[in-house]
Image 1 (cartoon, rainbow, N blue to C red):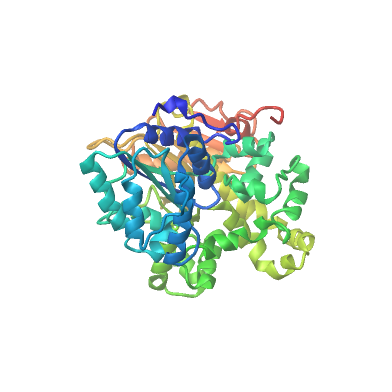
Image 2: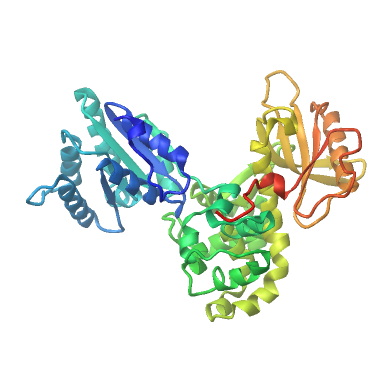
Amino acid sequence: MEVVLIAKPSRIFDRDFEWRQLTAFLARSGPQLGVVSGRRRQGKTYLLEALTRQTNGLYFGATQATSAESLRLFTQALSNWLGVAAPIRFDSWDEAVTYLCTLRDRPGPVVLDEFPYLSKVEPALPSILQREIDRAVSDDRSLSLLLCGSAMSVMGGLLAGSAPLRGRASLELVVQPFDHVLTARFWGLTDPKLAVAHHAVVGGTPAYRRFVGDDAPRDLGDFDDWLIRTVLSPATPLFREARYLLEEEADVRDTALYHSVLAAVATGNNTRGGIAGYIGRKAADIGHHLNVLEDTHLLVREPDVFRSGRTVYRIAEPLITFYQVIMRPQWGLLESGRAELVWRDARSRLAAQVIGPHFERLCRAYALTAPPELFGALPGEVGAGVVTDPQRRRQIEVDVAVFAPAVPGEQRRLLGLGEAKWGEVMGARHVDRLRRARDLLAARGYDTRDTVLTCFSGAGFEPGLTDSGEPVRTVGLDDMYPLPSTTP
């Protein structure tokens, strides 16, 4: 099958990379196994359904059901796909998979969506698939099988360690949320300041636009009203989404404790000790909960790039942060439809606890993909960290630290040090702080000869900030958001 013959439907926004990978997968000869994963609501099903329609393949979306009922539903879908007059009958999943993998001249690929539902009720299914894939390789049979799912802890383990399917896949595709620029385009936002605030609430999850009936804020002045009529309204599916994201994960049992962990991180208690103190537990007692949240990709652990062994946690889904900071403390009032009252009380927390930290993450994402001329070379690593100043007895937080690729035996080269401020005009004092951090790091053995001091701001810069004679750069919202001037 030629890749160019599988045209991406016009209704699919972007996802060009994912579509190319899928069509390239189908173009390969011989038995092929692919694994497609990603957090919920990213459009995996939408993408794979379109792929099977374009290629006359079989799409089967599993549901939460018993093994017997799931087998019956799969058999019905398989019979319809093959166009047989009488429904095929199987006594077991072993028999069904064997039959499927021995079919000749199938019209297209086979997609098993929500595969974790199937493997939960039929634990032997990955082993059965492994056996049949190996047989197909030995017999040189054609086979294109795609397993898809949103339970990241399950999908991540399909090809790991000693798992039966390890070494059998030729495609492992993770469907990510849209980045901040694509999100703005997808929602039709042309004001960068509005785009940052909007992304800090709903992130890059495409399904959320449908959850609010394609209602997007018209301009920055409409943003508060948009929140009240969508995210904060109990009449929209988005209202309860942050709670569902946690409750839908199979490994989560005591949701109250997990919500407390997320609330701790959302309110700035992002170290293991800080989280434990916030929820009233010992640090050793929350290790399992942190691991589960990491495995489900709801929490991300990030190293302090300047202090070995020190890590901080951040919430991967912006909507959860918004829920924990704004919605959860007044959930009863919101459920009763009193969103305007709640919002008046909570609005002051939005910039400091939601948009500000999110803006810092967007700045790091921008630095990682920025034009090479910004830092003089392509970054090898971008992160954040704290530089201790023992002489002045203080700590300097570096929001954006850009490193060149590490070279064994050489000093670690710092391409850039940056500070990010969402609602503050940046000036000489910010540059002085970065300069002090640079000098301290140089004394610790970092290569800072070409380090660019970078100010990222959502509010602007004082005049003459870059006229100091040393490498100082400013990055504003227009740099981070190359958006069209009119709504597409």
